[in-house]
View 1 (cartoon, rainbow, N blue to C red):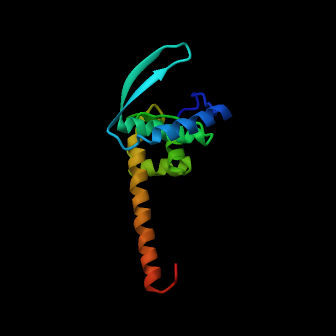
View 2 (cartoon, one colour):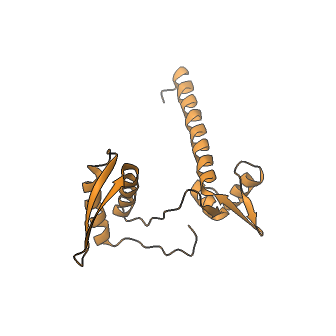
View 3 (cartoon, rainbow, N blue to C red):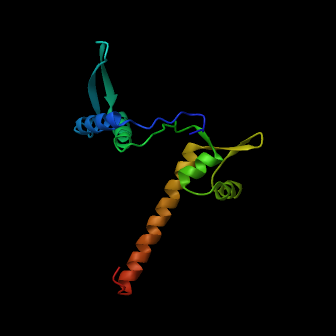
Length: 150
């Protein structure tokens, strides 16, 4: 997620190829593993087996590319910058720094820079999303009880 990575926006041809590939692979989305046959432009070919969860990741990638989006894969254990973490949470960097300093998300310092584990950012996001869902459910229930018609 660093600014040093090159962003590749898919071409119209790549978007169409991703759509076709996604449709084909989606037939196998609920299997434990899938056997693939690969053929390259140079005539080389190989056979491989992918676990079902890896196939799902590939389908997610193809889904984004088929919509014309650039994507980035980040190892779960990787550390990210405060700006990257803020972007993931859709909050400002100063707000994220406050969360870090208040102990809501663990971090470590490298020199004067804070580094946050991606897994900790995602855990925080999951926790706040769940709190938001519970609050919305409570509001919906309250509005039903009060006959507000929502």
